Length: 427
Image (cartoon, rainbow, N blue to C red):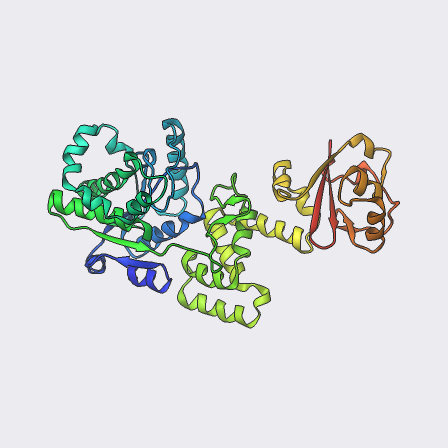
């Protein structure tokens, strides 16, 4: 497998430094990508770089995942219009541990010569004094050189300017490359196209400080076909941690991709072959309403990010909310999982004692829970067959609902129309 060609046909490749492909074709090569621990989880925006490392390893090379315990203290100005808040050491180190655990799910750390390696740049910066750094590193890179970088120019031209802390980031990242080149024989740095300037600083430092040669590869920055930011939803970022973004919501993010995005993303975020993808595209184009591409994409990446069990839960949740799934599914879930299924769906609390004698359905959905603005509107829709309780359609507004109908002795699921759900919680 030719790594550069693999990135190219998948639409991931943006640029390479001269000589990079020749080096990779010549011998097993170590290459790294850095991940800054700005949160306690990676999100889908990081998946392009995770996939890059996966392809790098599958091509027979040695991937190095750098978790930036040191660079996370500084903050990368690339692509930022303002300086971000700096985290405390305690939070930063907790984030580092979380990211390391996530990356271990994607890379093979025990496969012989090209086993993946995890490093933390705090290990080589913690005892590096400021005076030593500006003497041993800073003297090799001119201010003119640093000022010419796009990430610096854009910030200097903006209203907020740039602190010395952020200005120094490219030197710190450049030293990472030099250190890994020297200590780990790491010859290649990879990352998004917005990282090109920082990468070149690293190769230049290696050349000026040690007379060595190193290489860089950048990948395309992923955008949605409609121009909106990839990886963002109305509720915020889509995280890889199931506690921050449930497997169901993670699955739905990919399932809801447009046809144009699905055709792009299935190449980038799955390990399917070109022939497999082209066959899926042909099947999708013949019946777009079946969303074959979106389902294949969502299933593949949910399994690899979480596991098969998480995928099955996501599928059953999808079927329950949008298909013909039964109540049996909810009975198998914990309270936390049930609330997760209904996150973002209107919820109402009702007194369990009130359900003991029973409440008329029309009263329940208009007075005890604001599913309808009035009892008359509730009656009309119930009689028209537009209301279901616990997945069963009810046609009598005066039907009495009792505590005996509570799911797990706590929940009532009301459906208005086909897709409007409401959760009643008896307490």
